[in-house]
Amino acid sequence: MIPWDKWWKVFLHITPDYLLVPELVQGIIVLFIAYVTVQIGLELSTHRERMILFVISALLIISGSLVMALYHFYWNPFPSELALGGGYLMVFLFLPTTLGSRNQKVRRIFQHRLHRHLISKLCKSKVSVSFLGELKNGSILVCSLKNHAALMEVLSPEAYVAMANLYLQVASNFLVDVGGYLEECSGESIRVLFGVPLPIDGPINHGAKATRVALDLAKRLDELNVECDARWQQRLDFRIGVHSGEMIAALYGGPHFNQFSVAGPVVDFAHYLCAACVSYGCRILVGPHTYEMAETIAEFRPIDSLVCHGVQHRVELYEVLAAKNNLSIERERSRDLFWLGVLFFRSQEWGKAIESFKSAPILGIPDMALDLYLEKIDRAQKGDDLNMSKKSILKEALSLFSE
Image 1: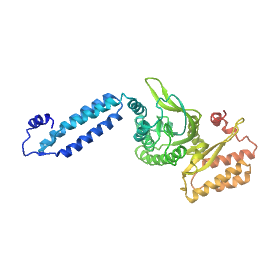
Image 2: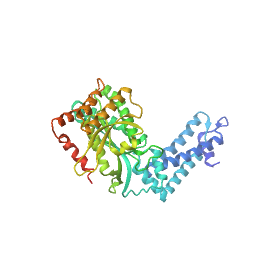
Image 3: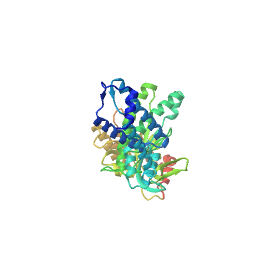
Image 4: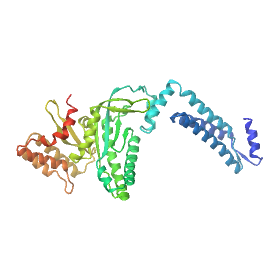
């Protein structure tokens, strides 16, 4: 026994009628404290945080022994104090090593933006953490509110900020919990990566993962809208764009401020898809690569085909409707007729296209994408240029595929 144990008994005025905590129980407590100390010490970002937690933990252990003494239980706190100190000493000795420096850097970069188990996995992986710049194949999900201006007009600044922060908190927590890397979370948009910085494990690929998460996020935000309606009598008009492909992933910024991020046409096109949802009346739009990766796990319908002189291929846009085999009979009928109408439209069989589109609507549910196709057919029959009305909104998007 530690000599301090005798002094502590004298200080507490321990008498023979006190019940002693069994040594086996104390041993288990010591091992538990040592393990937890190392785990928490490695997860904290700075030495200052570790020292603060060390002091607080040491005081709590002493306080625990004092409180137990009030009820005539004696617990020797000093083995636990030694375990606490030993645990933090191991952490301080480990951090300067190569592996320790890697762990510290990864946690500093990805703390709160990536789920804890993925941070631990990244620490243990062979992925380079220099992040000087590397082509990564992944999917990016962009979620944005399209009624900022309307909300600012009807809500006080405090109420607007409260509503926006509730949305950002709920959405970002959900997206990190499901395994995404929260690359951006601001008043403008939420941007999440899948397959970057770590590839997706299991049978599902990053495109399918991002698509499934987009559907789940929309459902979660619909639930949030019920709360927003009750508190502020306003709702969030959110839109989601998902695109997949190669991006340049790196640690962008300087020595005082830096962030792991991605750049490239795939990122720009995901933002375009999110913005284009308003023009087409959609909630979730995905690009062609995402559609190919996710067609087995979700239900889609074609929304538009981007073409431009000098571009050798069409760029298809698809709306995500629901999880695979999760459409009602009526919605499935509507989707199939819409898809048939698009095929007739592209082969310029106007009569058949009109018949399919006019049979597709579900009673009482507006369909802006369907109305746009009927408008295009009307212009085509009048001899107008079908691309004229959308040249301005497609110019930037098409340029992303012109190289």
